[in-house]
Length: 359
Ligand code: NAD
Ligand code: ZN
Picture 1 (cartoon, rainbow, N blue to C red):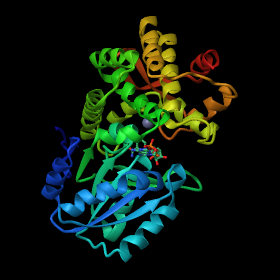
Picture 2 (picture 1 turned 90 degrees about the vertical axis):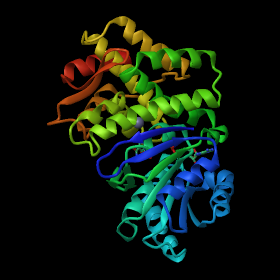
Picture 3 (picture 1 turned 135 degrees about the vertical axis):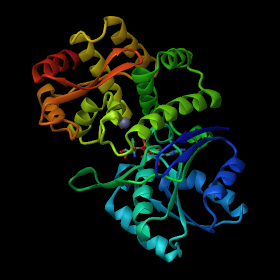
């Protein structure tokens, strides 16, 4: 078992990395004394893991009820949220109750927003089941649902009481979804840690990833995410911006392809390669660094196919990104592996020139 502390002033909490349900129950009993637990999951995870998960809690003496939202991004909706309020009321969840998110980032985001607002806020625990959720979305307290106007339009910051990460759940996740999560893992290596880069290069090239390797990747990723979140809980000081490495272009690609063609991690992988090329073209880093980024992304299994992407349109979308200030382009760029520059302003012409060569 490994524990990472997220030292927030008002809501400090632990991230527990353990394959033991006894560890989970012990941690749960520490933060939560009432009996009533409401599990939120999605239609895929419900089929595979809901029964065994709720049995763990029942055996420990808790009363559980659950709600299932549709799997995938379409489940991250006001309709899902609304159904949770109704189901929780029917299940008798009161203000002393606790909500557990059992699932990927979609479940975590919806259940978190629900927990933040149900009866003005009930306790919330994250039990992430995708690599992306284990290494990124379950930590940091961002919760949201999409509206017809766009992604993450309604949401709030709401920290969990703790996060239980059991990499055992990854055994049922398909390859594409695993790779999706790996994009965020390599992001931490590119921006923070050359030794972690070397480790990942070695492991991913060999292609043998077992529980120990996953647990180490999760531990490193969550540690970096926790450190950043501690310094900038609500994304106001700009420290948290470093987590957006690769994300400026990724968000533009996702919008351009209407979230249909690429998974988030696939778009981020492309965005990171582009940011590394931009760093090279702007002479912030050497060729070696760019090639190292490319090598690790390739070892992680990303192939880059940018057919039908339009450079001018992507530039326009990047300028509309909510992270842009006064419509000037901002990127996280690299000086070296493990050394990043947050919030670098880049001229439109330079960004477009690199983009045209890149696509
Ligand atoms: P997801 O939640 O849609 O899960 C991906 C797929 O895997 C789904 O079909 C799901 O049913 C299935 N699945 C989940 N766990 C499984 C398991 N153990 N075995 C088999 N199948 C399983 O997607 P995701 O990539 O986990 O999360 C993406 C969402 O997270 C996006 O909505 C994104 O906006 C959000 N996100 C939030 C934050 C944050 O800080 N809150 C950060 C990054 C991403
Ligand atoms: Zn991301």
